[in-house]
Length: 149
Length: 157
Image 1 (cartoon, each protein chain N blue to C red):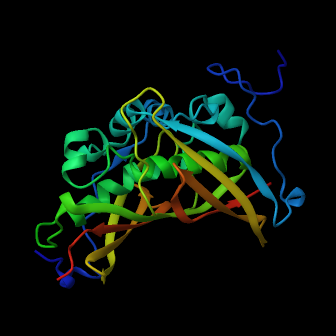
Image 2 (tube, each protein chain N blue to C red):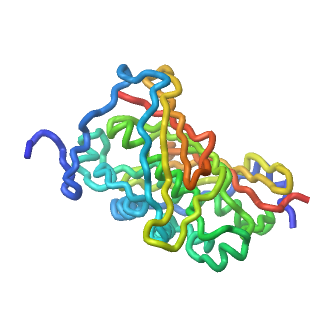
């Protein structure tokens, strides 16, 4: 099975709207062991100029994965997910996600290339509020081990 | 207890102390190294919080069967610790503009109470217009570089 090059440049339907909650942000901050109150306490977040508690920077992956899953899980693309590892990740932020945001994520396949015996699949996922405000763009490169040839 | 400084109800930590300012930052400055512990429990919690339940992050039998030395941490867990390093340094008034890494080798997490340690350090690489600062980050675990090309662009007050 090889990855279908015809999918290069394809944009997938946006994921269903995701509502960011204080509880989910606090759970994520707990899981990464980060005690910063700006992720938990609205008063601290407001003192730092935010409308509500903000999310740690990599919380954006929770949202962007919902969008990129639409691409990666498309059977026509032909990714063997058991052989996939994460190669690179980059976020460009207009601002941090915060409690109360309702956002969607829409993925585009921006690169498919061989690297030795592996195939590199790069997606760009735009995270926007349902009102269209840009929050973050996530660039993700997945490596399918042994996927070339 | 002062009435003016916001203090977290949960941690008692003052959040806006020692805010780093753009004018006080010098390119070439090395930032202190920090260590972050990752245990099997950390990975179980991260699975739940992130929704990434890939078995290689919690099942030793399957991890070894696909050629890994043991259970490995999510790459995004390591990136999260690097993010924590950046936001702890930059302070609550800073804005993260860009943050990127390459995952160069896995963080192997043994089944014991200590788990693995991720050591992160940083350097002020350059200052850009718009009060932006570029940080170059280094992350190691068990002598391996676990992140490469790790950099963050932060807008400071």
